[in-house]
Length: 116
Length: 161
Image (cartoon, rainbow over all chains, first blue to last red; front, side):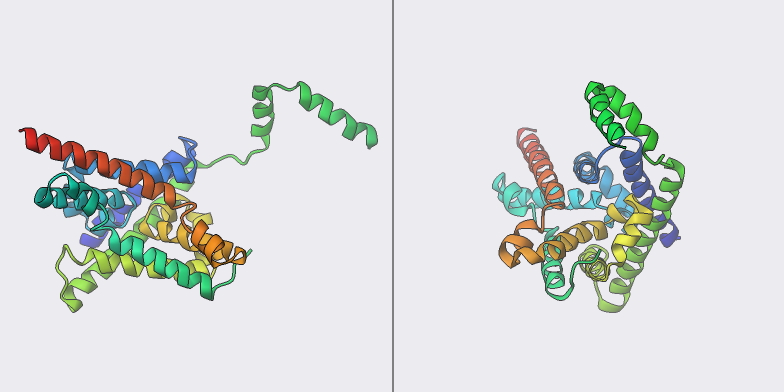
């Protein structure tokens, strides 16, 4: 059941992205930015955490969770260190994703040649 | 032939922007929204399903808790995505799935890796280093700015009340 919910919720978030592309006529970069910002806004109102409890990876894998993690890092640091924590904590949770993407992306450019 | 090619630019000069768009829209492929959404749904859903499977694997076999398991899960998905990008497979998936492969974190990794690979010929510093975030940069910028503002607002509200 866990897998079914992850599939359905993750799929639905992608459908929202596709609708923004096709019906909203936005560019992919605009769609991604919109989704990230909506992740932050949903988390600001405490909705995204509930969605993660409900859907698991269906909510953590789409890019909206990137916004959620940025906001979460900022807030949890701010609770212990005050306002400066917003700046120091913002990349705390997302560090894994960004570091992995940079490192693997660079290594890939060493190994692979461009295609097409 | 010569007269025909001559006549064309004059005609298009007189065209207004709206007329041009009307003309151009005739030749644009029609977007099948329903089909695109269906494809985005099942491919995006499958990527999340894979993420769930990885997460459960990290919880059960490697002793991560439900909260800490998302880091290695995301890193693994990114690794797979970069590998598929390098092999040229992810772009084919993207052609088929649209937002289904772009919205999950794998699409974020794909945009970084494909930019890195594509600009390698311009050198490692100016090419790879400078262009890596060409597409993913906007996601990070807007995410950070939004999280920063929301974090400040939330913290200030907490101090007041």
